[in-house]
Each structure stands twice: as C-alpha cells, then as structure tokens.
Length: 423
Ligand code: FAD
Image 1 (cartoon, rainbow, N blue to C red):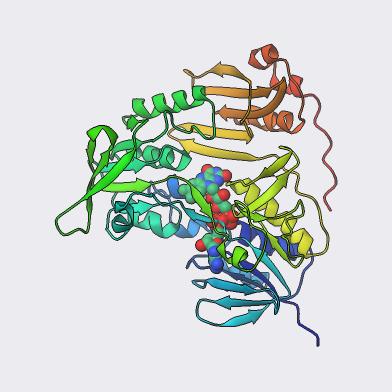
Image 2: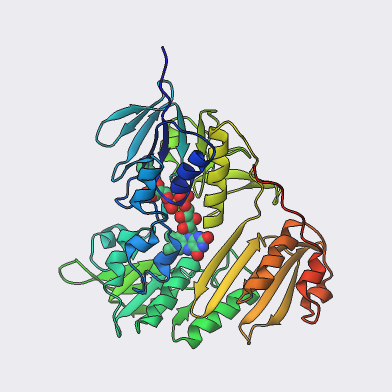
C-alpha cells in the first residue's frame, strides 16, 4: 500500500520553524506540519532575557515569521499540542489529545526545558506567584509585570540567562541580588578574566552579586502562596519580592528515548542531522552532534546552531544531504555590552587580550598549543567577524600580534576565502 508523504516537525521553536521553511526552499512540496506544545508561533528566545523582559517589545515581534508566511508556504501549525509518543514501527505520532497521525519522515526539534533546583522547597515554590524559571514567553509575561522600581529580585544562577535578567531588571530600577554557587559567574563558559570583568560590570551597575553561595531553602508567607526570602549557606537570608532561576537547561529527549532512538545528553545525530532512525532527523538544542571543528561530539544551546543545523536536517529530508560544519558561536547582551563568542574555549592554555577591559571594548583570544580555539569579543562587532574566520581556520597565530592593536586583525587573518557556491 502507498503511504502518502507527510513530514512532521516536533517542536515549534527556533529550529522547528527554520526547518519547515528550509524544507520548502529545498524543494519539498508535500504536506508539512509543525507540532508545538506552546501556544505561540515559532519565536526567538534571546529577547526573553533582554528587550522583551525590559518591556521594550511585544510577543508578536519575537515571532520568526508571522502567520501569513506559514499560510503562503503551505506549512500547517498544530499549536498547544504535545507529541506524547512516536510509534516508529507504524510511523505514527501520538498527540496528548490521543489523536494519531502517520508520518513519512520526522524532524525532532524539541529543544530543552529549564533545569529545576533540587532543594525540597523548589517544587512547592513553583506553585507560588513570585518564583519562576525562565524559558518561555509565558514565563516572561509573568515575570515582567512584577519588574517595578524598588522591588527586590533574587536571581539564582550566574550564567548568561541569570546575568541578562539582572541587567534587564536593573534597567527597570529593580533591586537585584544574584546568587552563584560556583566561585565565579559564567564559570562553565569563559575564562576567569572574563568572569571578573562581568562581575565588576554588574556590581558597578548596582547588583548585589554573590559567588560561592548556595541556596539551602526558601521561606514562604503564611498562606504559602509567595516566596518571601531565599536562605543560603552561611546563614545568609535574602528577602525577596520575586525569584528568577536560571541554572541551565535539560534537553527534551524523553520522547526520542522512549521511541528507542540513541540518546546521550541529547538526541544523537550524525553530521547530516540524521538520528539512529534514517527517517528521523533532529536539530537544535536537543541534539548531540559531531563537531568537525571541535573533533568531538557536542550539544550546543545557541540560535546559530539551531538555525544552521535545521537547514542541514532539512537538506537530509529533501534527499540533498550536506554535512554540518559550522563553528559554534553565540552572543549575550548585558547593559551596553555586546558580547560575541566563537569557538569553544575549554582546554585553552593561553589567554591573550586585545584592547582594554576598562574601555569596555576588547577581544579575548584563547589558544591551545599555539592554535586559536576561541574568541570572546566585547563591543567589537567588526573584529568579531574577522575572529570567526580566524577560529574557523584552526591555525596558530602569534600571541604578540593578536594583542597588538596597531596590527589590524584582518592582516593576521589573511585573505577571505571565496565562499563556496550555494546549492
Ligand atoms: P526551543 O527554542 O527550546 O524550541 C523547542 C520547542 O519544542 C519548544 O517550544 C518546546 O516546548 C517544544 N517541544 C518540546 N517537546 C515537544 C513535544 N513532545 N511536542 C510538542 N512540542 C514540543 N542563544 C543565542 O544564540 N544567543 C542568545 O543571546 C540567547 N539568549 C537566550 C536567552 C534565553 C532567556 C533563553 C531561554 C535562551 C537563549 N538562547 C540564546 C538560546 C536559544 O534561544 C536556543 O538555543 C534556541 O531557542 C534553540 O532552539 P530550539 O528550536 O532547538 O529549541
């Protein structure tokens, strides 16, 4: 019997949205449906801790595309709908409302969810009105209405999300305390010098930033519907009108795992974004993929990865496979600082600074045995473009020349390679 083509995309996030349009661009003209458990059209999350949190834009401006674009491309959207199960033997998806559909091919773009705190009080706190993890538009709708001058906000977690929330809250006149369990902020992603720089920036802006401190329990009001204080190691008690937690992400891999797909800190895919089932691809925060650049498997949480891997997955579905070869990159906006990072700095043995941290315009180069493996650039957008190319080249550079501002970075990078013709 002939099964009709119908490609389903599970997850209506950045990767899912991008994948659908990339499939159309690759020439797939058959039925195409995106299924997502949020009520929104696919949207960008970065503004959730930045402009949107500050109240500078509305939810619809976060949408990757407006509804008309999906209609025009003949892409169906099933929103507020969860895929509960994948029945690979019969090529069926089972939704939370019990409905079943048959797929010819499947794309998983399930992203991740906020990592929960492990202390006992955390579950109880989730039922209150002033304690929130931050991952979705709905989370921010709840949080930002409470961002008023003089309110006391406690941010748990000194990673990018926590620090961006702190900066956005300060801009609204909120009193902010940031609690980081490790000895420094951004410890997992950057060098001590960068952590120190960001700690100073936040303290100068008025944030009460504390490191090496762990939350032990929470205090609730008499009726139990609000958190009133955060208790920490060393007997420290911090009164709170609002608590926002940003302590990382857990990839949404349960549905894939239950279906018997290979999962290992992410849905395991090959360089073509294909899972252990040849009819199923995956893209974005939920994947564990081989990185040509890093020489090992990685899982990334970044928009460029979601977008570029979605295109690779679409190409595979369309029968025109192309390998994923992008160098990781990411950005973070805090106050007047635009940080852009490329490569992965883990394992570096040399740190070279170009420009001065005091001037808030500099680039940090990470070398490993002479080879440039990563660059963090603050307020240096133009040099960052060049730095991306330098990191991608996997070459050694003279540290003294990197630090010398009288030598244009372009000179060190060498000529731009002509871009490969687009298929
Ligand atoms: P997601 O955006 O998480 O989308 C996955 C979607 O699938 C979700 O809507 C989820 O609910 C849905 N879903 C999951 N399981 C199912 C199911 N079974 N059925 C139906 N639907 C399902 N990146 C940057 O590069 N720069 C930044 O500055 C930056 N800032 C960020 C700030 C915040 C506050 C956050 C939360 C993230 C930020 N990121 C940033 C990361 C970036 O947003 C993610 O890398 C990106 O959203 C990943 O896209 P995705 O499609 O893989 O996953």
